[in-house]
Image: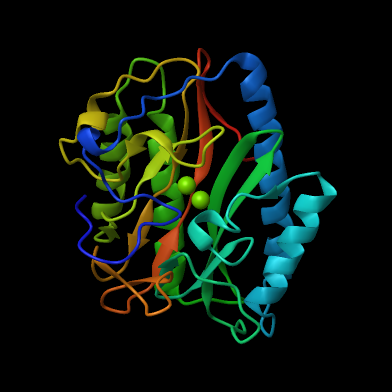
Length: 273
Ligand code: MG
Ligand code: MG
């Protein structure tokens, strides 16, 4: 692993293929239909949270809303209990990149940005999607960070077609972000997703010459593409709670993720309403 310290949690750090024995698990049309439903539930949770994200709201309240929506659709959180994670969603504010733990003490303020990562387990499969939201009006720099990160996700999705390689996705994300003088995090990656939250292949957000980068995308592959972008540096560190990952220099961070199926008709985003 390239990661120097900290625990490896909801997103995996880059791994060599020798450390990752599993092969990509392709999904049948029937399985993708279930994943479509799982993805739709994730999108509904995001829609509810988007409305609830206001100044004065705690991240614990957001966690409770997420739980209620998942339960309403007979889904459960794929995060709670995962390697001991203590909440239903990840809620990461400003310089916090990923794995923020919802808390009654974390109250949103006007001008904050908050990244919400949601994994829903439904009929044996997982949908995984993250989004960064502004709390009320946000700064121009924050707005730009969100726009560039979201656009880089779609640049990656556009490359998610049969016959392309994983590295085509990685390159598209990296070029889009670095072309805007922002920084792609390297310590956490996208991934295959299905019955397990983290399946092969890993999907880097930068070109690294890794073995998985050479993997040619087949019909039936489902991957979570998830650019993580920071204003000041690509480097991160983990806080003393052993979960919350922040930018090393305290600069703002953003995280956009969709679960995407590779089909004969091109990429299909599963985590939409
Ligand atoms: Mg996620
Ligand atoms: Mg993910």
